[in-house]
Image (cartoon, rainbow, N blue to C red; front, side, top):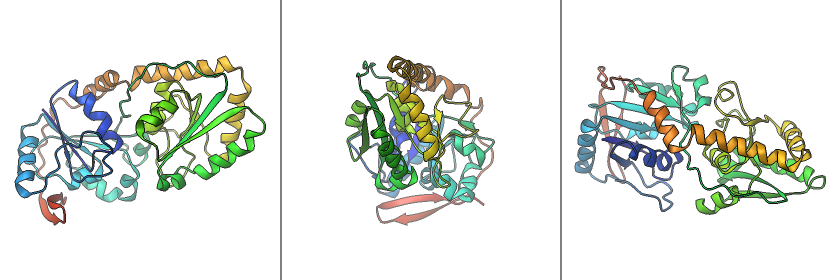
Length: 318
């Protein structure tokens, strides 16, 4: 059995990893709070000390407990178990010292490639991504960008992306779609028509590379353009654009080439996604990088704090 501790069910790793893990073993999902629930499985949300004691018994019986982000560590109710950590968001960068204290109790640490610059001993891990049926492309090129939320609109430099698209609109024939505030199913439907997907431009405060939305676009057959770095480069075949000028140059190149060449590049992205992030391929990679003996020997003291929503303990490394 596997127990997964997450902050909320709507976070990307939660609703992507659970189905993949369940192909392997029984997996229980525990969410510390109802965070942006979007109709996906809410999991078990403890509301009392008895509930957390039940979670502790699951962890102690599990082959391992997968802890997602710092928020997941703050919710751990027991020090007895085997722990695998996965870090993928800017919270790790903002609270690096706290994250390092959390990771000291983990038997294995996985991160998105970008975080290897601050956690160099970790193992890179992308999120599993469903491979849906391929949709033939339209005659007119479709470009997509997904800010995701108003907060990420600034983090991803979406305004600069919009300005770049505006400059190119009078020179090339294409359709531009912004995915923001839409149901996930509708976003996937739009990505199924996309030839080019713009993920993010470089910032100091936001994770670079290809996020979950970009992986979905690759799986659908789109060429992804994003801010890459030396940590992402070896892992994923996306086009690099650090700033608006570089984005414009890449888009001009893609829009100038023959239509069939762009479609072929998108199909190459989809083929890569099948080999590396399709649930079966992801699970094979994940299992291959787990330690043979997951049982940790160092004991860490824990303390418990009450919350308005009910009892919820938090780790304090010593």
